Image (cartoon, rainbow over all chains, first blue to last red; front, side, top):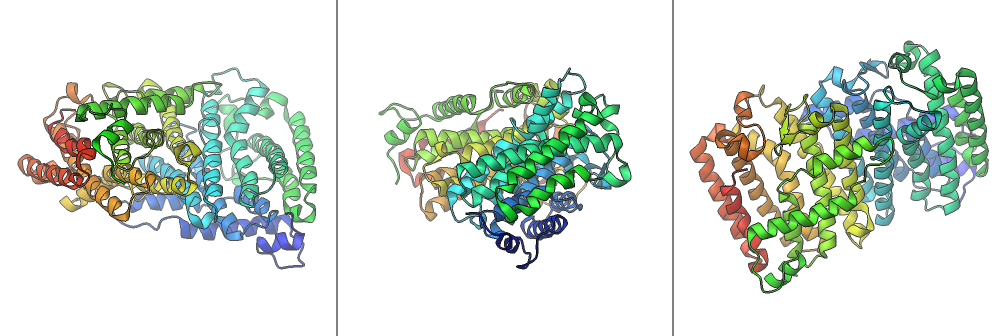
Length: 313
Length: 313
């Protein structure tokens, strides 16, 4: 079932009659998922409190919460209980944060700065960062399998399966594996697209389809949301690469110019800045059109592509 | 429902009329879980094949497969389909292997040798080892959530939840966190017991209770199996510590004397060798008695404690 804008707004906490603006919807998703994570993540306690402190340090670092936004907005299209959507969003943000913590490790991308603060292995130590990442990944599955996430155990099993697939060896982890070898390998543009679809695209796709899974949408809905997620994911990556070339560390909150330094091929280095921008615009347009199907209920999802095109961090 | 020895034997692949000996039951579990892992783990393919090669390298290293044995033997007590038991066993072995791969990392225990071969980060590299561990953990949840593991999605959700709890921040990961700080902290015997119950005990407990979950045993069954797992887990750890003091690298297939070198307190260093041995014997006796409830169907589970007392690797 597709809801009116009012109904969709209500289910993400916006009072009736108020047209959801994109920044408001993003802020609401961020606030809701932070509150959920506060409750769902363990409180530091016992002899092993350090790993729980590191989990919280990494998660509560003021990220944009773009993935939770996608889950909550796609869920709102199908009249999903906000509490179910936000738990699913919390699980995905937990997985996303784990991937950042592990990717920042000295043996991976070796980053000291993340979201403007020392990375987890700098603030704690490498062993704690590895363990905190492991624990965030594990916690995500615990959250999804819990009855609070959905009344139907079949739906919960499907969420667990699809998240495992999106985040696993043929998804996010495989993408990072290719990325680690990217400097040595002769990657073509298609290979870089594959890399990015695995590394970031698969999780974006899960975010968008999770709403339909929770709301038991149709196969056509899932297809539509997968198409949107595909475009948004690639658009996100191109704009990320553009920021690495053109952005400032101050605004992005992380080191810039690293891809070039490390000899990594990106879509921007392969296509050039102008072509990359054109492709990004094309993807943004198509993504917005795909969501037009849902009318005003999908206002915020339709506004996201423009936001990604214009972002400075 | 509790089965006859014959019925239990059949469900782990032993022909009727043959009394299951412990070594035979262990070998059968190892063979069955290896065959399942061969099918369930991804075949190396694509630009990211390296991470899949590392997953397989770490898993197919000839371990004892003690955890799969526990799952399959406890499942046999409740007439569980062997195919369901072996999938669950494969998921647990995948989690166990991930923990070994991460624990061996230079920033953790810094081990070069595991099961007599170079550790994953030595055979590949640190980044690949981190990713392969992540992928093995993720794969475990994908296996459990799949309909092949059990016809009831409620049971599958419970398996996912309980594995996440056993392996998570308040279980295996928390135990490793305490272990990493053990050299600096003044741990008492009770703290070391807590550490070990989290680090190895929680997963042992899940192995034993998984059989009852799959077979939908009673609360009394679960309590009995948890008691057995508790004793077996502690017994396993004491004998592991004894091997570290008294064993040879040749027989154990890993470096020995490390706990002492690193100033880590173990139950053996706290209690002394003789008291540790006495306690191990007491635990072994109680564990065997607990399983006597199930009669001949639990022959192999009753024989395990004696095997652990006598093991040389």
